[in-house]
Length: 221
Length: 94
Image (tube, rainbow over all chains, first blue to last red; front, side):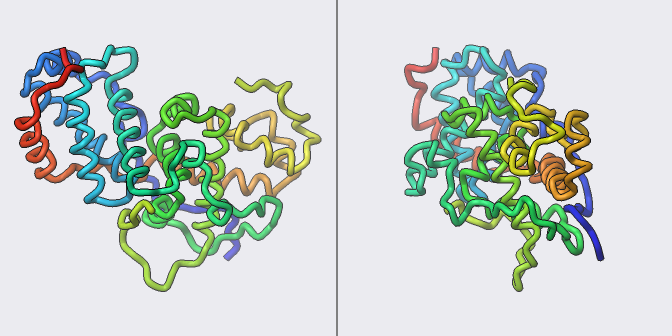
């Protein structure tokens, strides 16, 4: 079989997942009410954003238990900090940044090599993608399915995974990622490129003898 | 925003140049390097580079459909409610 390039078995787009949330009816009112301590309004904000926050945590952490804990922390933090939301960006973007920052703090507390964000997004040499750009052995036999790609993303070094998830999965622009991760725009572009190269490497490797059915079991260490 | 003058000549650049600038090409080309008219001659003359671009575009395209949004368990909200009862609003709230 002479297949050059990656082939996916299925493209399943999920409307509204890639793009950030558009303004939601009633959200602005709920935000203002929540600022004044309205518990019901806060409950509405939770209902509106729980899936996005939880899914983001799950993507970044790759672990259900940790993702639920971080979701809880994110909304408790939201409750405490919602008074500082001035509407200069979309609420969903603001909440996203809040969540990303909490996840980063969580990762640091876990003792990962995340002393600085520049280090965060610079994995060790052994994690770096192979630089076989000029080779002609790009042939991939068989196809790569969505589960394989999810598994490959889950196995990325945390820094690569973070930039890849924020840009390619979440749809943030490089300047937004640079702001969130406190790095340069060029660094974000570079790390995204390396993440994609690493994924390409991973997808070209033969399947391990024992395969898992989900890519979200890996712990972010 | 990177302009054309920041790049080498598109038709005569080496594969190494292409590799160096590829992150910028992706960032500036709306994520579609393979259809960038400035790069058509180069990609036609460098099939390995074209294959690499196709692979990376495939990965980026399929990333959009990864990880269907999922609901947290009900215990998350229960825990939040429980903690909110324990901790009143702080100074950040109006």
